[in-house]
Length: 143
Image (cartoon, rainbow, N blue to C red):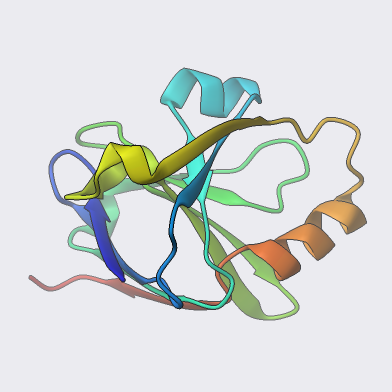
C-alpha cells in the first residue's frame, strides 16, 4: 500500500510504501506536550520504505527537545509536522503523522494513546530501531 502525505502547503511531502498492506493502521497519539499541541498522531511500518521530499529547506524548522534524539520537521509556512526522524547508529529512522495523510480512509486508523514517560534514552533508541521506519530517503530542494 502506498500512502502519501504532506504538510498543508505541500512544502514537506512523503510517500510511504507499507508492506505488507495493513488491515488497519496503528495511530499513536503521543501525549508529550509538543505532540499534543501539534496534533502528533504517529505511525510507522518497520518493513516499509519512506521517501520524504522538502521543496524549500529554508522553510522547514527542525525541532528537538528532551533527549535531543529525534527531530520534528515543522513546516515554517503552514505549521504542520508531517514527519519526525531519528538518526541511530548512522541510519535514519522515521515516523509519519497520520493527520498529514492524503486519501486514506480514516476508518482504517486504529487510534490509541502513547506515553513514553520514564523511558530511558537507550530504551527509546532501541524501541525506535525496532518499530520506526528504517528505510528512509530524505531529499531537499527541487520541484
